[in-house]
Structures are given as structure tokens and as C-alpha cells.
Length: 150
Image (cartoon, rainbow, N blue to C red; front, side, top):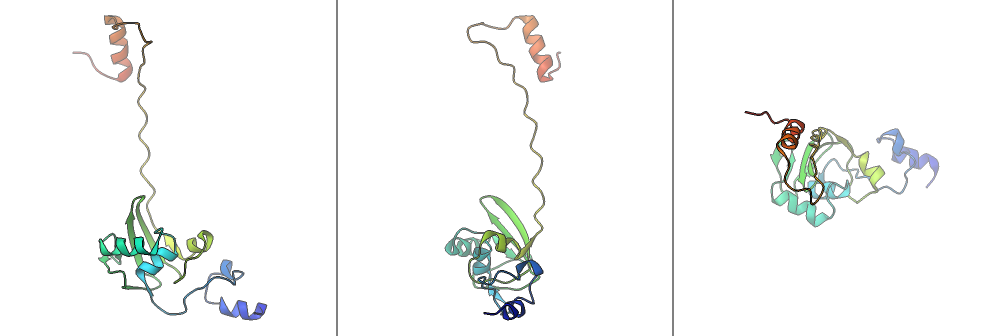
């Protein structure tokens, strides 16, 4: 395939994908949702993607879909899997599994950032064998933990 033919073949895609001549992009306007979720690496296997659809964990434009439902460019896809919910917008249609860098260009991620981790509370540790804390040590521990005395 000549350089001109490759450029013409990828003219409808973003410019950073022009040099990837081995990538199979679908020229149809719709692709099955389970195939798209699998090919963009939102699910590990095609059967796992179909299972997510059947169990209602995949929504296209806020509607539950069957595995055979079509997805097109511009649709919002929500996938709930073991790692959490992903909200993505379809940017390119692919029907075959592609590499991770190419898969990342096939969608626009609208997933909100995870909530910040809670601060770890400092736990006062006592040396083994020191026995029960005295009244003064207990008050110091309560002060450290933020407890108020009565």
C-alpha cells in the first residue's frame, strides 16, 4: 500500500493515527456494543463484554443494551466492571481488538476522577510487654486520637 493510499484510508481519523496502517477501523456507521467494548479494552474478553451487557452493566446513552445493540460515533457508553464505572464517548468505531495506545484514541474518557483517599489515622503503638497504660499515658493517647474527655 502506498503512502498516499494510507493517508487517504485514514483521512477521516484524527491525525495521530495516520501512520498506523495495520489498524482495522470499521468503515460502517455502527458496530455491536459488545465488540466495541472488547476491542477498546474496556473488557478483557468478548464474552466478558457480552456478559456485562446481558447483566445490565453497559449503558449506551443511559439505556441498558443487549450485546447485539449497535453503537455509533458520538454515543456515551457507561461500563461498570470490577475496577469501577467508566464513562466514555465513542470517537472511532473498531470491530477488531487493537493495542492499548490505539484503543485510547477510539474514545473520549469522561470518567470523573476518583475521590481522594482518606488520611490514615495515626495509631499509637505500645511496646510489647509494657503492660496497661497509666492514666497519664491514656490521656495522652486520647488527645492524640482526638477524643474529648468527659
